[in-house]
Length: 89
Image (tube, rainbow, N blue to C red):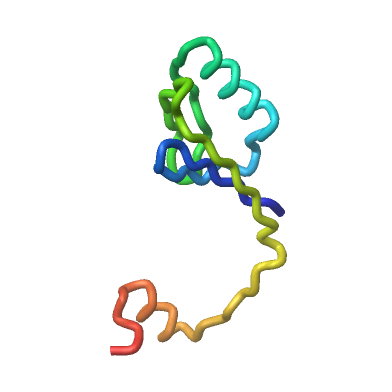
């Protein structure tokens, strides 16, 4: 499974896995070349985000294969401590 991130003008957006990156790239490029405008994004944790893209906007896409990431199992006590931010105290 892949995880895609868009960094736009220094702000980072975690894109919904159903986002077709090539289509989004084409949309952003056309918007910037036409002088600028808003582009809607499907982002994780939100219904959507609307971002303004202009010719001077820096745009970076990254894609990671999350199936290769290591998974660490925590005991129930460790998980609760970690979620609350008290781990190691």
